[in-house]
Amino acid sequence: SIIEECDRLISMINTMLEISETEAGVAKLDISETNVSKLIKNACVLFQLIAEERNISIVNRIESDLFIYVDKQKIQRVIANLLDNSMKYTKSGGTVIVSSQQNEKDVTISFIDNGIGISEKDIPYIFERFYRCDRSRSQAGFGLGLSLAQAFARAHGGDITVASSPDKGSIFKLTLPNRQPHGY
Image (cartoon, rainbow, N blue to C red; front, side):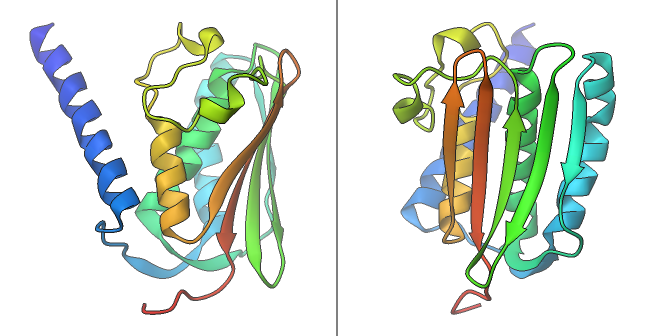
């Protein structure tokens, strides 16, 4: 149990370091043209078994062949975090919808759930390190996932926004530029 706790602490420290480096602008991004549709579809397939065990439906409404310039591994982690959170806070029998919209300026990927939602007083703090809403404290985690996801999104010139209502669900929107970034 001591080794497991040490592993958890190392993981937490590494995540905090990644957040700090990314926010400070010193983390290197390995930018390449990436089919984000494929990343999302693969994440949905990966989470499908968990969804079935929890009696949650994952509905994939992603446009085919959304190609944008991103660091593939970092955006995979953002997608996995947002999908995992949507499923974690959706009750049995619920639904998680992943959809996309693309225009000349950007691509928006939405994670829509009909889960427990987030109170209005908590929304301004959910992207802060270690912040855990009262309703999420029973779930595993450090309260670092959304901080890391937002740092990665912003490093790409994008952002993550949220709209939520308690007991009605949440909509997290990941927006990324639909262009090749300068300097890459």
